[in-house]
Length: 326
Image 1 (cartoon, helix red, strand yellow):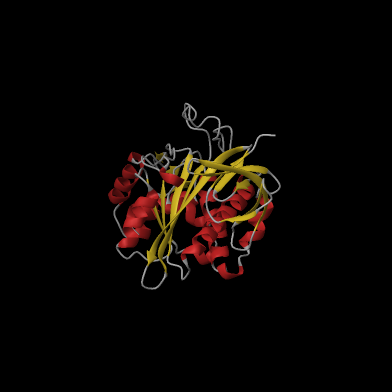
Image 2: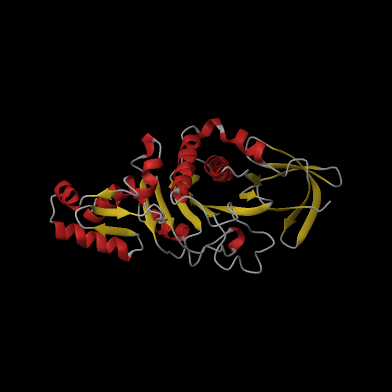
């Protein structure tokens, strides 16, 4: 760990309190001037740190910048060594992590960004990812699973996110099959799972789980094309400075809890009870075609069971669903 990151870790643990520069220098075996240079570098990155003569340095309690140092304290003990990498701005966390996976990066790498300039959703759609109001993260997996199991990975992630949102924010979170989280009746999170297939082995070479969350409303609100369908977990941009860090950590805690016992599919119970499709009249959209039916259930392979308007029972492993207006 670099001197700068060590200092940030200490300041995060003592947020709102003064930390002696002399003590930091002694801990790191560096000069007071080197400590000061690290503080100036952190301030340049946007951290609100004050320096008071004879008292030391203090990280403001209002500081709201995601970092591995702000997230790690909230991780479960068995996840403290997760490889977290946090960026201020990237094109797409999924795109960057796929590049790292292709270079041999191991399972467990988590890439997080404050902003995405080229965020992607399902079907190649653009995912609006403004700075400072959301969480954009991707998780690298190298599971010994079949291609069909990638649907269950998305389901697992949705359950992990919904559970975390309710615990950390108190907002009721519902799931629209297969990959969207809703609060206040509108979408607040999308999940995009992308996989590379091992054609010789017939399984997955690696799997990238991308999660994009609107925590608070962006400055100037959402673009016109999203206003009717998108929202944020918190309607007002007033929340504790550690909320986003806590939410990231809780999502990872839940995700790895379920992933460790993936074959038992314990996440399905959480997923089913939060689904707002079951029992609803829906439209099943495939290209330019649309069929109407009723969502009956979600099976043990995370597929949606529907009864079409002609009475046929159909099981869906992919597709786009919309709820029919009453």
